[in-house]
Image (cartoon, rainbow, N blue to C red; front, side):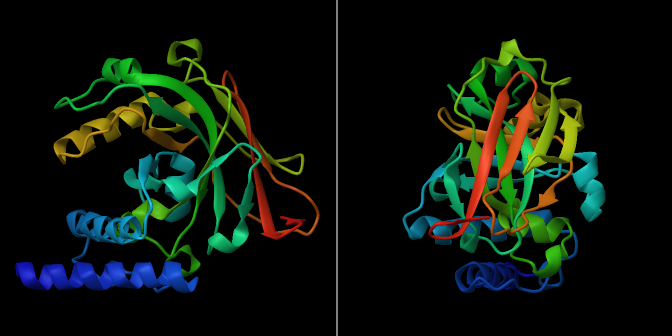
Amino acid sequence: MTRTSTDTRVSHVARLLVEARQLREPCPPVRDELAEGDLDQAYAVQEAVIESLLRQGRHRVGRKIGLTSPAVQRQFGVYQPDFGMLLDDAVYADREAIPLAGFLQPRAEAEVAFVLGTDLDIPSPTVADVLRATEYLLPAIEIVDSRVAGWDIQIVDTVADNASTGAAVLGTTPVRPGAVDLVRAGMAMERTGTVVSTGAGAACLGSPVSAVTWLARTLARRGDPLRAGEVVLSGALGPMVPVVPARAATGYRARIHGLGEVHAVFTQEEGEVA
């Protein structure tokens, strides 16, 4: 395949995904538009989509790691992690109203967020380097979303679609990395008082810090290292669950042992909570 044909494919797929965002209309799977299993092409599409969003005035604030939990991997038949970018307009505070109209097919999962105090711009960061660079941890709920109709995704689809990133809700009480056992940290996520997902830190590539170390090494090799001030969503601690609209006031609460809890509250329109 020539460089020109590759660039044309990348631009075409990026345009499909950007239009799906703009029109609020999911598109068919994009994997058949790219070379089979070509993650470099898929990440090139992701970069083109992000560039389009940055030109609209958005700003990079961090990264997310996807497909870290065996439960989530089984849900989609994808057995390797990927990553995407977090932008400023997709990060919410605890209990802040989140408009459902901004998503196509939202699902929720509980995670540990790492907030970096220093750059990770060395060639091959270790777990110790990641812990030293982390200023604090927060409990988080990631709202994953797919611009691909029916969540009919394989690894190329989700990578191209910014790792199915939707939004992030961050807790408000910072915790030092050394103050919590991330491997054994249990998680329970509730919707209106009913537990809908459970898990633990060990489900996230063995430990959330292991997942962030994988990301730090991957980005360092790509020449785009993690930077001070960035937020890193380290990956799901348990199964993702659909965000189910309802007329009564409701929301999602994730509790992670040692980190506290965080709440995601969805609104359908002014004065109405989902």
